[in-house]
Length: 479
Ligand code: PNW
Image 1 (spheres, rainbow, N blue to C red):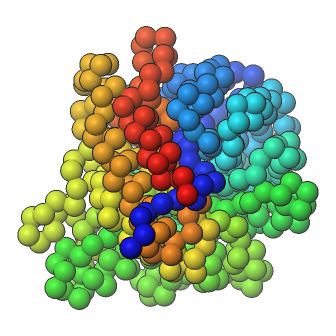
Image 2 (cartoon, rainbow, N blue to C red; image 1 turned 45 degrees about the horizontal axis):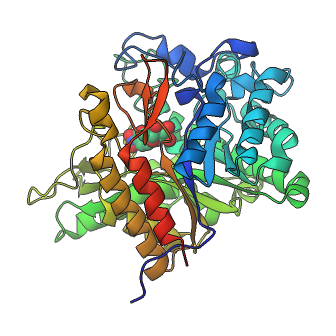
Image 3 (cartoon, helix red, strand yellow; image 1 turned 135 degrees about the vertical axis):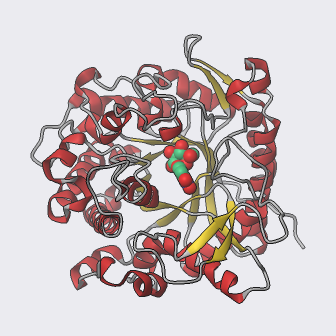
């Protein structure tokens, strides 16, 4: 068997997101996003913090780019804050020039340093004004037009300098965590101890449907008006993690594994690659899952130039007996961290949901490649937190062997998938360039290959894992 390797022009680098790093929420005309307001609700963020300062990247983007260069990154995936560019969000609302300029300057700085920008148009920070005006994602007629106009502003301003566009980051998180569990903004859930509004049994499916349609509409616009002259590609980033049966000898657990992948990944992937929702979802959700009109299907089917893949871990899956609960969103399964024999799926991290499993990564990327007919794949996020990292001294944090080992395992698994499983993967963005605001976990959970000294002047110091990532790709991409 040939040695695992990656293309010589393999695009590797690091990812971040606007609300997690920028700070400066009210500078130069930026208005609130749903995350600014969500963070103000007591109890929603573990350490009571918010993104007001974060990594201060609004002021330090040149430092960030210098850091990327120092780490040897070939690409940088960042996201644009909608409410910085169009503070009130809507299609008739004014564009905020200084907010837009921030991203143009960042892109110029990246190019000046030979780093390829990959732009995420939406990474969860919906303008609060659109939520207040008509309920955001839940209003298809208004939302789709507003999203497409926002995307158009970006295509017009940056199109000549950006070859990689991502319409959405992880719609599963926006919909399930935001509209079913209520753990993420805007905090909708049927659980009345957490939210006074909302219906977990219908809203996530409607929100997901409208996100898909808006994705399709933005891609159509890009292809019709920008692609030929700008020569870029556009796709969506979906998240999901590998599944293994809790009892490998129980065919119902084996089946449940596939169903769980369908409920997380194929929910969005099937409409894009096949034009319909998975049968397992239709069967369980019935009419609560919207149906594509012919017009919607035409927008959505075939709307990916590439597949953006985010994944972090794997899970054991046990089928549930009895009918699914109305608010169930996973295919009537139990998600477990140990199998029937008590074997853990991976070591503990700081994130309760994250147990690393490199071979699961290899199997998952093959599953995606097979299901969607060998799309061109860019891994747009992969990485880990470390149990107790935030409690360590600075010197100890810089020696993050656990994270280095994570990247060794996962990047090698990726190379195996490419070399032996016929997977067409062209890039890999590690999460994350630096420690940042980890949403509902606040700053207690660090994901960076770079330590950020939030109290000590926001200094950025590369950890051991940053070195290892560069070595891995320098070795694997020689062919
Ligand atoms: C992703 N889950 O979020 C996001 O794209 C990043 O912004 C985030 O910082 C990173 O992963 C690390 O968490 C996820 O509960 C959040 O399965 C939660 C889950 C998955 C992804």
